[in-house]
Length: 379
Image (cartoon, rainbow, N blue to C red):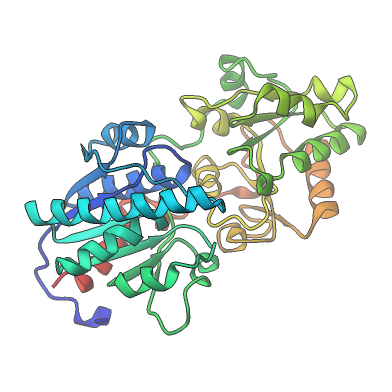
């Protein structure tokens, strides 16, 4: 690879293809869309290619990014079942040949793969067509096919130091944190007024947890911590934003008495999560091994502190007792939330922990960092 000192002067905008193998999924699509928006604003032409219509394609359109539907078969994450593995391979081969055809018909300066599944077929197709390919690594999970991904990647971008440990030492990588949309995520002038508009209990301390209902997010920790806070005499409530089914809600709440259940609200996925986050006093995020945690920087942009666990990428983003608190284990997390929920130090519109936003998470700074990688990669 070329070093950054060898970046050519007068680098012109590039034509970038961002291919995806599905249009449904988690926050990685949102981060990729923010990157596409930043690259587009810098003067590059970005095309997001999906095999089907879906929420992810809509997000790119909302950000003003060109979207094309390829009709190539959808590839979901591989599951450890014989038939699923067979279909994964068949669809991957079909995607490879479809990718070759697309790259033959249109001239792109670079193929930018934002996930593992697109990197396999698109990276190989790009290599056969002599088109540079970037692998933007968004998870820390090592895969059996990483060897082939690495063989076809001309550049590797990781979203955190934690994720970068997935890549063997002999490879050169760039660690570039995810961006945040500061036009959406910003402090509110009146938290209590915002809560009334959202029909949330306006008084007391308001905690919030945002994310999909998956085991490693550990929502049960947040509920247990709220219970401890209430037992300690605190006046606190907890709002969940995420895909919690009615049955799952009952499973989480049944062990607790009514006075605790009355302080917990499941809002599902909402159109404007930034309004709920900015209205909260603290974000709870007890996840184990978060790959990055874009919600951390969204909270920071809203000047809302984060109470998280000292695992994954959280220590890279959260400054202890500055932008939040990093708990060492379950008991420490409970104590931190209980103290925060019972504290009389926090009043309306106070800036807890003095949270200040770091400009390196802005969309333009993120896009410029990626462009530095492209300046090296695109010859």
